[in-house]
Image (cartoon, rainbow, N blue to C red):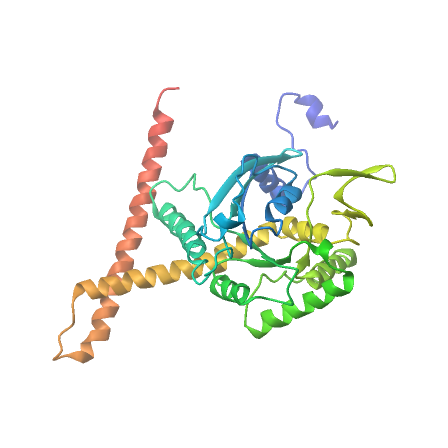
Length: 367
């Protein structure tokens, strides 16, 4: 204890070294604020019935998202349409809270005619973008709930020799709206050579069709070698060949989650048996990046298209320009866009003023 603190025991003392400003503690402040607020993440799972989607999701997050789920019969599945089933659960681990929403799509690919089975999925993704856009443009933007789909696990059947036409069509329709992560389901049905062959075939077809799946970000040059090697292995594992299990089996005196077969046990969390651990590691490590890509790429694309359609509709409602003076049409359109931008800026200023007034009124209210 210094002499100054002894002379002034009730005074304020600087706990840091002289010449130390303190902004190096900003990451700690962000960490505390983030932990207090919690995190939100929305995961969509798409694939045919019977590929183990629900089991895998429950295995990933160690929870039961579908306690009272009704499984339709084979005859009912051929007639039903695609449904959107969103389940939200609050998960807490070591004081960190995660609000997880899993969007399931029962009925996808089960009908005899699957021509437009992905339309409702596209509509759901667009609806979440539209809701976020409205909330972002509203008066109260403090408590916006982000229900946008941040990641989509697309399950590929292990019984074929690659992608089906429906697989290709679905990913081509959605790769510019959501981060797609291809997953080969029920990998315990295949040998290692068959898995390697199927992975190669799937990636070749994805590249041939111009499908953009979620790319894992490259490592910075200052990252340690172990992390770089881990990211390299994750990139090589795409598409992830996984299997899920929620039952504990005793193997050599230890409890593991896996599946018991006459020839042995498939351990879900053993990287030698399947890519389950790699898939979970990728999802948790890139959780923030998946959200940022959704915000900066997919949402901005939707927002730009939405605003462009709004400007185009305003031009149509304004009526045709004078046919005798076509040279002035671009100038008139430019003036209208400028006026529209000024009105939007004025509206934002009014919203900010209103929010400040509401905050002042709440502070002035007696406690």
